[in-house]
Image 1 (cartoon, rainbow, N blue to C red):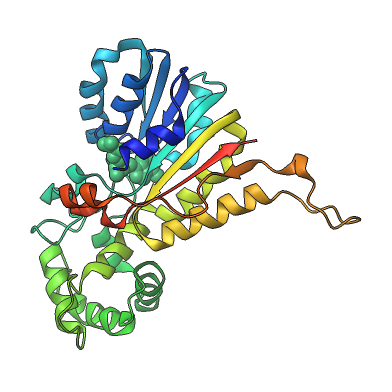
Image 2 (image 1 turned 90 degrees about the horizontal axis):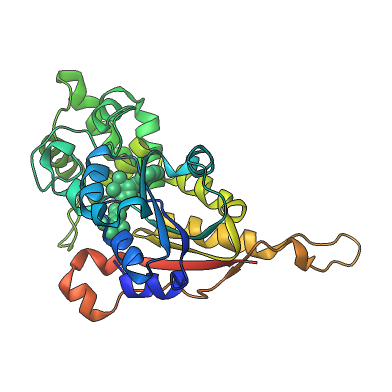
Length: 299
Ligand SMILES: C[S@@+](CC[C@H](N)C(=O)[O-])C[C@H]1O[C@@H](n2cnc3c(N)ncnc32)[C@H](O)[C@@H]1O
């Protein structure tokens, strides 16, 4: 998504090492490799199924590509272990891939019946573990914080009552339960279970904490002039990107003069406002509607 804008901001012409932290199906990575024969690409993904597909797609680029399985919050360690030094560009295209969303057994979407899994990787608790084992108060917190669900209490109470009868096992079971629990939701365009599913996915994959861990390491990894591009798909992520980049761009204030010590500024933000996809991209791919891109340059 936002492929042209990503390439313009990452400036792969001239080559160098580029890290795609969210390799997915390898679309952005393929375009980066095609942009200049001197580009070397390190692709990271926590999903072995995505890595296998991306490896096949990028095989023609041979030695120029390395695919690493791991969490992008550990990007520093992953690159060190792979012997990678200065990096020209880092890309994070957050969230889930269409392959993950459209595979019923992964349990990301209530459009299909499937087990309540939602893990991008292979370890850790599933959405089913959370729904069936978390205390009701924790469910309320997750639904309100990560889903911005106004009826979080009502939904959590309904879950706590239902699981006394038998464990909640599938996507459709949970969706129907949320529908019944929410008092009224009018004629909205989005399904009333959307926020609860978003909240569970964020909790299962520790998405927000991992994002901040990634962003804080970026200044240590980029060469001077190196670029970062982050594409997010929901407002909680975009807020973290905006605030963390602002912090890293601000630098430290000198206690005596009250002025910012310019040498302590680590990044320059290149996007005063987030870049949004155009009408043509949204028409071709409705999922692009919520995409927001922010970019920065290492000083
Ligand atoms: C939106 S897709 C990326 C699509 C990709 N840009 C493309 O062109 O095909 C996001 C990918 O990031 C991966 N991902 C999300 N969070 C991650 C994390 N914390 N660490 C590693 N990979 C992650 C997901 O498994 C998914 O495959």
